[in-house]
Image 1: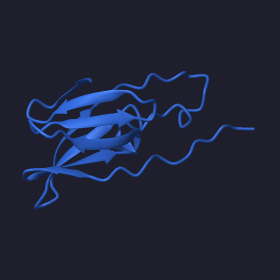
Image 2: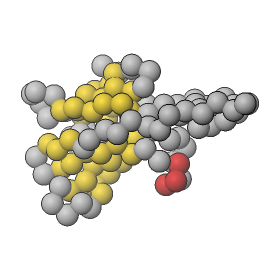
Image 3: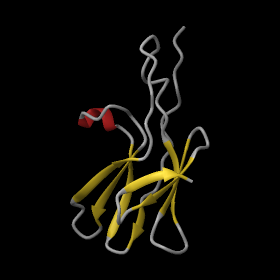
Length: 107
């Protein structure tokens, strides 16, 4: 019997000023090394993608199926002050995103 995971959580986009931030779920389809753990910044008016940021790294065990090891973002919110984002993954780890610097750090 193979282990299967539930689909990734549906995380609504967050808008700060003229930029909309979205969680990128199927990042391997874009040639990125992991599914989950990425956010995308888009121009809110045009929808044009501005940049992509890996929030955290998932280390995979080659002896296991990849999909059961994926770790997805489960929530994303903007902070009350400072124009930053707070992200939490399925494992309960929290991260702070500074969109101006395009950086992520553990919170």
